[in-house]
Image (tube, rainbow over all chains, first blue to last red; front, side, top):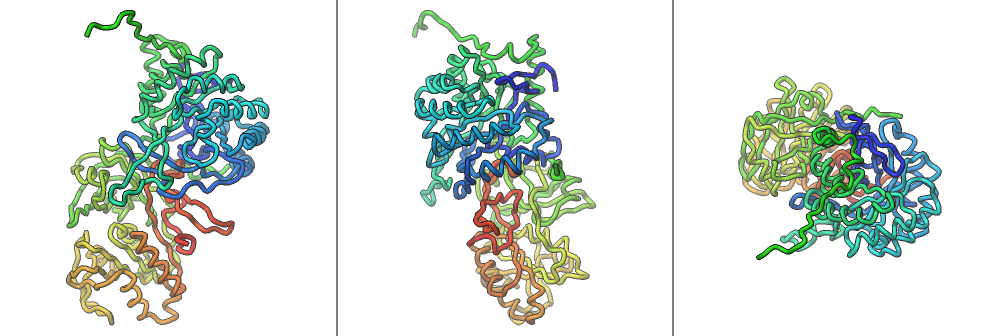
Length: 317
Length: 286
């Protein structure tokens, strides 16, 4: 790995700015089935969303392809926090990369309990999922209300000293205000953005393709939205040196660089793995080449370097 | 820390060696791959990029392998945008393929494997037939289709109480495997009815002892699989079913392709891609 890709995120040294996103790579081992794929090619792996008790998740179909993207409604299927802590975390090869647990609760107290449980483990950081669009209780219901978001982050903060990252929902009016409240409550980092709510309909049966009726839209289709949200959140987070994982439709090194310029310190890759499982090599190499070409010693110099257009007078029409 | 699963699936660009069209928008695609042609278990599938126009890959069952020519065949029917784009691909072009994926059938010790395939569920059955040991196994394939069969056929001189001179799939005939065909449409030498009607008639010709040696393997539409499961249950014979579901990663990462499964500890959602696509019939469709 090229040394110019090293980045510090919430006090954790990452070998690459790439973070594999929660929900896309199971519990860290699944993609290693593919010859040539290695967790050591990414800075961190964010594990599947975990709740206190096991969850079966939603009924099929859970995914559907849409133009330049896909809708998913998995519904937080997971084996529960005790199984994750006792049976999965010990099997992960911590020498390869850093691991982040993603926690989700149906009550504020559950978030607190989960933060406390994972605080006792060797996990590198905790991502608070307050933006899952696919569960009836909790999830995005917390993320779309900045005061509730505050309370969720606050209780997690009270229960762990590990780096806390809050994954923000784009399905809300003012994501920057939400970011501010999460920082106020003690979030060390922010993940921007989770999926956008969407639907696809089978016109023959007149039913939604997705068992849950609606789901989260991801993939290149959402990239421009994710980029703008990253820019908006950065206007707040930079004041506190709270780093962002920029995510949403990243499909190439150029996409990743856009997010970094907009204010992301690290970049999340998820849906792109589904169609190009070895894309991380290309993204790493592409970012590294870009830095060399532009005489930038380290990625951190690029973070938030966006030069906004500033025309003082409107154009004549 | 067991990491034996690592690297078992290859991602490669495979050249299209042949792409043959059959009736009713059915196609057989022959692709070149040293690895897949030599490392595939019957019942496994590949996850293929069908076109630059569509991002997501499509899971397609492997129908047969040719380890001498280092090729493998896929059978598909045009049912949506993905298969339509795939049908446009030309010989000599490359397709990105990830595979082989999935658990495969448990068939080694089965004395009488009965392979039931419906429509585009036929390929895994052909893959299974190809790997049988005819010295120790006495198989029968039963293939059903409501449109013309997507393979070369020929009339045999065999005779059963329920059909004289049945038509068969030429490839299986060449391999020395009995194969009966069924349809609700009228085709020469083809039994009229559902696969389960034909299977029931065949099982009636077996003795109780012979029936104990039977294990059914099936792939096809859910309605057919449910009927096969019921039949297997009535006859008290073992049965494995191959499922399909929309897939995103196809490697176990996203849990997008699940099926509800009964386990010793209760209900569970299993991933069709890596926990399957083959499941014990008793564990699904409860």
